[in-house]
Length: 391
Image (cartoon, rainbow, N blue to C red):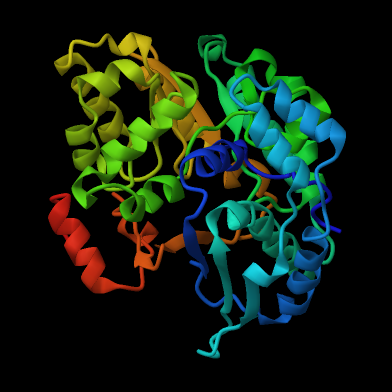
């Protein structure tokens, strides 16, 4: 089977899940799947996806896995106790061919946030692996290794890049589970200190790699329905996060409402409280310049803060960004698809996004409009108005 452990997911699923347990245990949510590639027919994969999900829903956390989570300084004991009882439930997820009859499939996850939050990453990994298993019968792993070695050499062979820090963020769009592991081990072996860690908790445990991650878009989106007032959603989300983690896990996500709205809310208090911010849409150079200027305007030394770049990164782009910002701030990089699904085949651009919370539409207003996903145009228009975002 494709997923063999409930730890085979991103760390930020657990960090967000802990916040849900402690602050929003009654929240009800809905997620939907989307494939952004044109002309991809996923319908032949539906049966296999359903079988893999049934297996996923039979898994439980082992005692070793629970002990590992308990050893992480920011994971609390009662949350681990809850996970000891936790099991995914297939009644909360449906997979079917789209009624549009265009090759798309509908994956809908609907139920308590606490019991559905862990579906996203493993389900996306399942869809990816099944699709490539069906369409690439004899994978060219030699080409994948050649490409990986070329990327590693670009960094490892340049002494001026000794300070670069690269993390694997590629679980959800990986070519396969086994290829993901091979890539990780090659990075650890050949990049040395330049390889900072992985978002994948299972491989972090199995191979002694640092697990990395804080929050994702769904957390701040859900706060649209959970906070006291829509305009204060972002502030509410950051304050709730800070109450939970007391200064730990201090990288704020900056693109749920676009960079301008983020900077309006990320005042001196948050500038000092959080360790930095993560870029995930829009022009990365512009983002970095604006964030550094914002820190300086709020009398915070940007050299004490971390800029995390994670949007569609390639190794050449990462090197350019590092050279641009390394002397002005701390910089770190999370690479996904380009690291774990680059064997010469067109990768799937697939996502599962939260679209409702407590019966109310939720959305993000990305600086990359193609990343927006909401089925309620009236709500999107209202959200743009509230956060002063041009449509």
